Image (cartoon, rainbow, N blue to C red; front, side, top):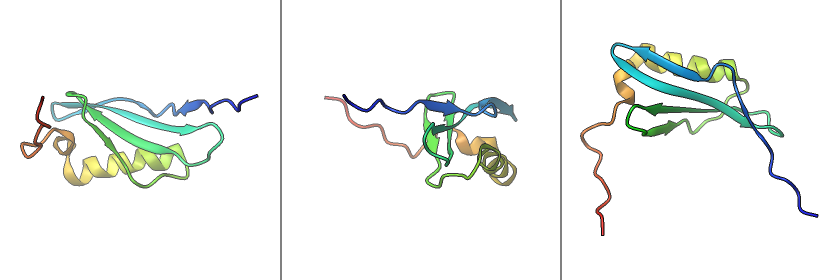
Length: 89
């Protein structure tokens, strides 16, 4: 019998955040059998920013998001002009 994949646990702190005319989706999650939380921010164009470091709890992950917004503003999550699309075939 094969082992089942663990479920994904989503924090209640996940959800839409808007400020200064910029809206993003904040996703804070972990695998059910792991204690560390992952932070992902998805902008309106669907670009995803995932933190390299994991967090001890979901509050710490959300505070990290809030700190970036306080330090750099919500515009930091917008797609920048230096993104070069991969050429199509």
